[in-house]
Structure formats: structure tokens, C-alpha cells
Amino acid sequence: MAQKQRLADFDKRLHAANMVCTLHREQNDFPPSFYGDLLLQHFCIIVCHSGSFRFVCNGEEHHAEAEQTVFLSKGCRFHISERNSECLYSLVLYRTDYIRDILGTTILGMRFYEIKYPMDCRVWHTCQEAEITHYISLLSTFSNRTRSEFANNEKTLLLLALTYRLCNIYSHFTADKPTARNPKAEVYMKLLHLIQKHYMSERGVKFYAEKLCLSPKYLSTIVKELSGFTVQQLVFQAITKQAIFYLKNTEKSIKEISDLLHFANASDFGTFFKKQTGLSPKHYKQTDLGQK
Image 1: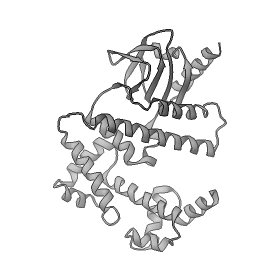
Image 2: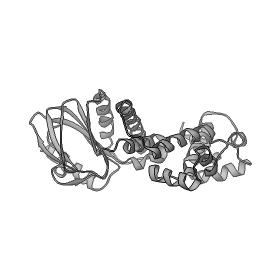
Image 3: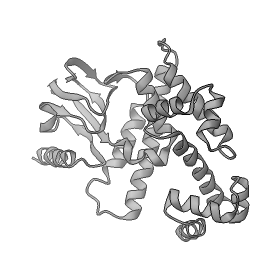
Image 4: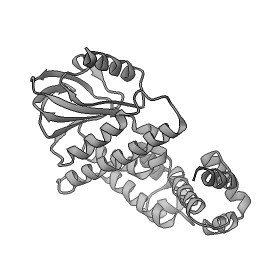
């Protein structure tokens, strides 16, 4: 009876489009919505601990068994078609858009892998099932907690850590895979490297377009298509992250940070930083010190 209630509660959270929905271990049945035609609004991970189950993703049937992990992309149509009595699993569904601005290029890296290897569904023995399950376990402790700023921040950090883990898994499984050349993805990855090299002094689209021998308009189109950001937004993210690092981890003055990041003056830096974060550099530093 307790399990039926947990599954019913999970369905309610799922259809409320929550940021994260989890079911941790010892689940031998799936939520009712998983047996219908479910359109996924989240990125979905299912770790099979024992037994096996079959499912249909976008019209194609797949099979998962013990020590395998299922990865399902947002936008898939999915349903469970069969499970055996020994089936035990853990799962997490989460929305990457919630942490994309915080994580920056790692989420964009995941997007890159989706473009380079367009698959709605993957079933892998990753050799990291225990680690993924551990993250699901930690995230599951937040399901019924009273909301607080500290709990939300902790949950966000866990999602960041899980996403880093997934990117590591993706990179491992795609490293040796032969693929057709994808010119747009190659341009995008070259741009990310250029931004990391030049962001402290170069902010204009024209500079990066010239380095890539492309027109600013074409480069902007590619970047927006692949990442959802403009070139300048990617540069501004890099600048903001470096500014936050200086504010949190050094004793440098705001004027010194402004000079290091090649702003005309501290006032211009302050205006930029507040637009990006919602706080002035001084207020951000004071807030951070107050939390320590």
C-alpha cells in the first residue's frame, strides 16, 4: 500500500512539471503514468538494479536488465511495456534548463553530445551505476522536505554534480565512436575554446567570427541553434564566473577586479555585474561573506 501511495505521489509531482522527481531503490513497479503514452518533459535516468524490463521509446522497443542504465531525452514518447517480478530500479527525472545558466558550458557540452549522436534513448552498462544511484538517493531526500533556501541550494548543487557525472559518462562512451563530420558542432566547440582563451579582453561577436573565418551573422545563427544562447551571452557568462571567483576567493578590490577583466572603470564593471547577477559586486561580496 505504501508503494502504491509513493507511485501515485510521484505521478502528481511529475505532472506538476517539478524540477526534479525521484524514486529510489526497492521499487518493483512503475508509476501508473509510465504505462501510458508519456511525453517526457524532463531528462530521465532509470538504473535497473535487478531483473529486467522492456519499454517503448518513440515507437521502438528496448530492453534493460540488471546493472544497466537507461537514458531518455526530453521530448520522447515513452511507456513501459513489460517488467518481470525481480525488477528493482531507481529513477530520476530532472530539467536541465533549471541549472543551465549556473553550469554553463557543461550543459552545453551535453547538448553537443545530443547533436553529435542524435539518439532519443540509450541503454548502457556505464560501470557507474552505483554512483548514479547514490545521487538519486541524495536527491530523493528532498522530495518531502519543507522548502528552504538552504535545501534548494543543496539540491541545485547535487543536480550540478549529477550532470557533471553524466557528462563524464557521455564523453567516455562517445570518445571512440566513429561519426559523420558535423561542421556546426565543430564550429561551436572551437568557439567555446576561443572564448575561454580571450573572454577577459574580447567581447564582440566580430572578433570570434574573424577567428573562425565566418560572418558574425552566421556564427550567431549556429550558436543560437546549438546552445540557445548568443555569442555575447556565452562571453558574458565566462566573465561573470571569473568575477565571482575573484570576489569569493581573493582579497582583490573591486577596482582591481575591474582592471583584470578589462573594464573601463569600476563603475562599468559594477553595472555589468549587477545586470548579470542581480547584485552589485560589493553587495555580492558582503552576502557571500555573511554566508560563510
